[in-house]
Image (cartoon, rainbow, N blue to C red; front, side, top):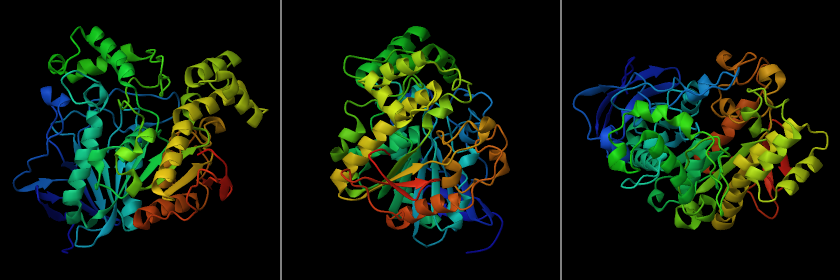
Length: 488
């Protein structure tokens, strides 16, 4: 391949001019579907028709309409990115590759998190240089968020954000070979909301054949809303906007108004006679499914897909520490959370008191929060997949404690990401308000975690024993090498 500063790759949609650096090549803002404007915001994605000439793929993409999110003193901008960057096309992917040549390298497709309402490929944490350095083609995906992506509306297909991800995976299948990737060796990985979407793909028939492996980081196999819960969100949204709850009516409303209504959707009571709110009020949007993914794996490609799944040991800290609610939590807060998130609240609290007899109310609240949001659903997903697939499930736990916010953040939600992407030494992640805190990253942790992810994408073996629900083995990063126990 010619050596010049701006490489050009030819795809079936047209030619792209990218960038080259020491780790390989980068192609940004490649459209996989047409722009979702007006009524098309509530329609299935349509493949992009392509372009004439050579498209400039050196600049980042616009982003899906999204609100601004803040976490107190904690700088979460590397995770959320710049927020809403309006533009004509945001259903795009970025591709990091060692080289756009004829090699067949493993491919990883990353689905970002953000509570189904925020996030984009522009987030600094998703820089794929380390993956390209290690011989992997990394594809990061933008998808519809919030009301256009996940509000359940008459006259519109549900889970349009999930449909976007499926469309992006079809683009990968048809196009990634032009970037030196192997369409027969694709690993989908997601974190938080992106992990819940990844888990849902395992139970989606339309995903059959689109990927070979899946990595689920701090998601939930039981994180979907029931149709009844979704309709409560829809009814309230329509009420505030003053329209009927139909795609036709919503098509006339500008994106700015959708963002303006978001504060009115906070705190909705989504508990029903048959279901609790799986997000505990943290987001009014999720996937909308009649059956949770962990219970519907046989409907999709899960039996043929290897899965790596896990959580962090102090997930709930992200929602308490930056807001100074860890120390101010009371026994009443602990009980209220248990009642909202557990079928047997008293037993849930007692189990955690027994495990941590010296824990403060805030620490108990964090443990209950993390388990309800991520732990229970991940454990159910791991067990269900292990039984279905026959020893093709691998489980991890991330235990390294960030020293951010006066040493209080701990192994909170999102803290594992810099280690997966091998960015933990970047100065913009450090300092007291940085995600990793003022201390240096521990030697070898990023190498071990990133290396396990690359090995799994390459051959399906991250380097430890497969998960057996009857004798569960969990690989611990940032702690003892291996633990045995029922939790993820």
